[in-house]
Amino acid sequence: MYKYVKDKLDHNYTQVVPIGQTLSEKEIPQEEIEIREMVEAWYVSGYSPLIGEDTLFEQYCCAQSLANIKGDWESQSQQQKTTRLQRLEQTLAEICRSRVYFAALTRFLSCLQDCSVKQRLTEVLSVAEATQSKSWLHH
Image (cartoon, rainbow, N blue to C red):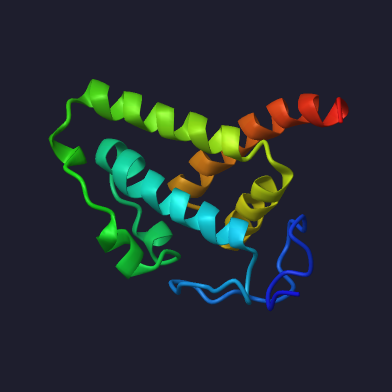
């Protein structure tokens, strides 16, 4: 169905995914394209202004996408930056309660080298998994 994924719920890719490129719906599910865009927005507008840049992570992002996310997040106070990052992470965790988005973020994280961003996003995924396990039991 897709070049790099057999099924939307798979947690692994079928082959190595190129890094630093925008992928199409023929290569990965639409939900993964969306989660990648959300992660890039989280990084530029929440993570990076508060914690700093992670050049290792940036290799995995489309440079053009990162450049297109506009905002003046650096001028905010530390409290505003912290609040924004927490809200963005709560939103990501809520979105990842959906099995399809959870699988998409899991796949994306599987191709990242160990870095501070991967560690932080893994924590967000753990929060999503803890809350989704409860809701999946009821379906």
